[in-house]
Image (cartoon, rainbow, N blue to C red; front, side, top):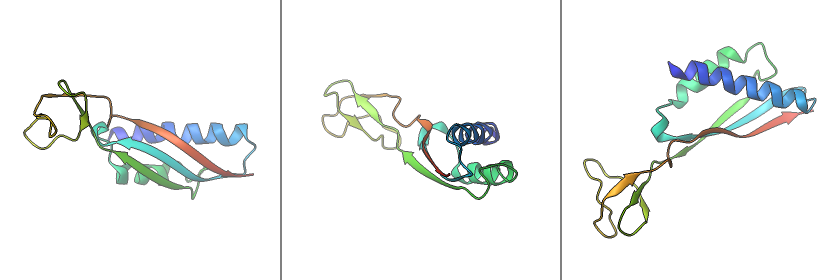
Length: 114
């Protein structure tokens, strides 16, 4: 249910952006969402439709670009995707450490009509 509060923020960001650019409406919102955030795309879309219905964002399309979480090998310093039940680097066998890659969540761009 944490998608509700984050979706409120998305609508507010878009309304602010549209206001600063004297837009008549927001047509598209492009989000970047790391898979490690736990946000569910369909829930964001669902809440957006409800929250935006009486705003300048009504009927705006939302696209989500997902980012897979990556580990950083402590031996060879290469990033890699973790396989279930292992932190082993597929390149050298070293141990991977969690990174911030995959924890992103931000509005990448907003398209408007003036």
